Length: 110
Image 1 (cartoon, helix red, strand yellow):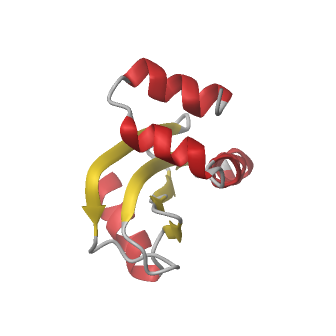
Image 2 (image 1 turned 90 degrees about the vertical axis):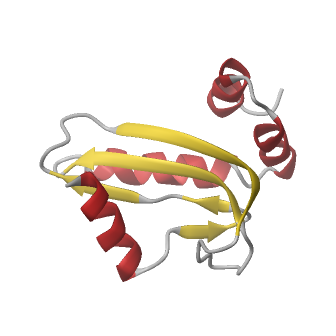
Image 3 (image 1 turned 120 degrees about the vertical axis):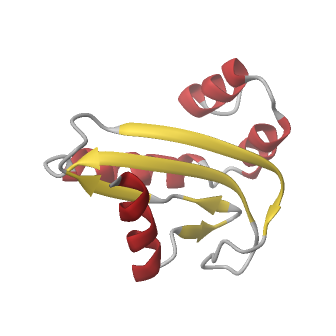
């Protein structure tokens, strides 16, 4: 259901928001609490349609319950706002340590 939901969402409109970032996301009955996975690619993902036409390197997949609209929107807004920082994006892409990645996402550029 999640895979189908993500692909259906992408058919509506690409979730590539620009700046090398993709945020595939859905709300579905089968999810009880918001879940997010982060993927960082060492190479450009060129077949991920993006609003600015640039390749994607950072992906946040967000799964939320049908009743979690506000939390879903706030999470996407927080990602978008935080990742406007080019140094933060660079550090995320350059890091291979999950603890550092978590720290960068949680506390921002330090």
